[in-house]
Length: 414
Image (spheres, one colour):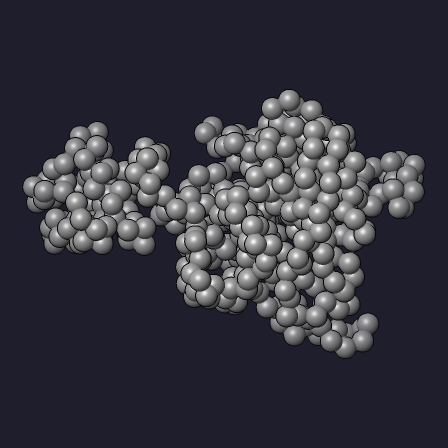
């Protein structure tokens, strides 16, 4: 078959010019070989369209990743084949899937801005981000700011953008965006993680302690447990079959707040662990050493990696779970930040694992100056930091362009 680039040229050369023109215009479609194709007769005689689906799958699977999104625009049949889960499975069996890091943000104006970096990264770790904006149509009843601080969860090639009362599915292969079922309870600044092919969320709601599970196959959320503590501003991580809910502030009813001391309601450095398969909460008494607030976390292999803020500095830790009740913390090399943490400024993190060998963190820093009153913002900087687990060292990648500042990150297979 030759190299993928040459085969991509061959595929494109098989498509008649008249077929390309018709594919760009809205025409009536009919079914042929159980799929939609253009109604123009000239397309039926193009060699590529005469192939049955299984052979066409083989052809399309050899097209370079960078060219696949444009193929979905050629005709309806190509679009349907690319969306078919069997196409993703075929590329996996052929060893053509690769992990890709995505930075994604959603604007209130109805645009999703995304950019991707294939893994492994170049040695110099300085690739250029190429943002791509996709328009979406918000429903009138969707609250403004629903995706101001979303959580991302990658399941295969799909990245789910979970906001307050709304969920989007972003196809990392084609760039298509579709609405999906929202969480049962509206949440903000909550914990989310993927275990198996299911998404779990907890926290971020003052009126419930429910833990929800999302099944992408049926587009449905269901409550699977009640969390021992209601948390706000927490982050999530998954290691093995355990969903960790880490950090944040403890919230509850007025009666609960009156019964507890102020210190007892702070969960800044603690975590709860839910064993998904067993359907039970584990008695893990783990608090990040030295105090501080957890600002980012993710799981890789059997470990959980945690970033904690201590006023004007950061610390980085690894949690090694041992059994159901024990575990140890190991202090690791903190990330290199060129910005000085100071009062009046803010630093936000979005963390994800890249397989079991690397971690990625998008760091968004906003600096302020002036007195306590009338502080003015100096703008927002955003950069990519990559942590090599084996070498215990960080590397800095390219700064994100303005359209991706305050973006969240996720790693998908595409």
